[in-house]
Image (cartoon, rainbow, N blue to C red; front, side, top):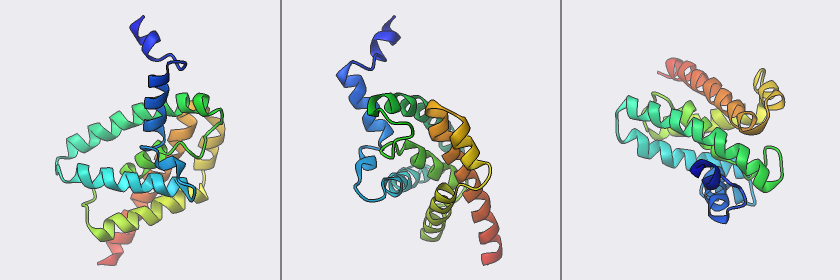
Length: 164
């Protein structure tokens, strides 16, 4: 019963919290490239998490953000009245965190991860576009970016292997 009351979308404080989280602390309202602005929020969060230097905390935090992102993205679609609204950028935050999984926070890694994640998020090679089109609600918003993050992570590993 309490959960139903707290999650009621008509409740203004709940709508504000959902919007705040889904838009990456309002970065999604950037007039230019809101997805890129969301990725920049992901960089900030990555730098904070990587300073802990404990992989379990990073992993559990990313899993927690995954659950949260699917939930708030679906609710934010209802609030904003648009499927996969460009203002919803928590998926970019999460996608960047997936990109940077098990990488240290060096400028080279951060920048390369940023470029690769934005590339895969925009290009949407198979099956990323399919995931985006076939899944609805928060899952459709979030899981294509998770997949872009996986592609970017693997690509970064290959590039850095040959970089040395």
